Length: 113
Picture (tube, rainbow, N blue to C red):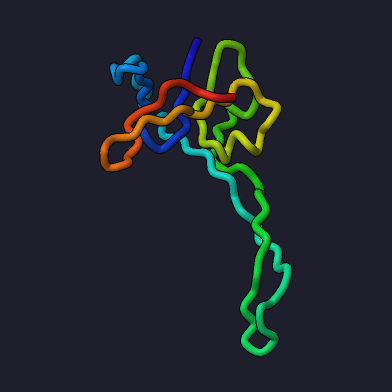
């Protein structure tokens, strides 16, 4: 089994006692979902303050070798990227985040699909 980290930071998996079970370094590839904005109204006819509806667009930065599921390979991605591909079973999102006393994420307890 291979775990490929497609996030911009190292992913640290912890047990419930805070012990490190594994650390997965970033691959250097970070797919992003573009956003397309559709104007739905203007708050003022005279000054023209737009109100947009943000709509997910194309996924950019996903290497060609990861565009399709591969047996035995799991890709760690952001929740936004996973949401764009709801049927893929190989995309994992860090879940049950663990934070330090300042609220910074220091790891996760596992992954969700």
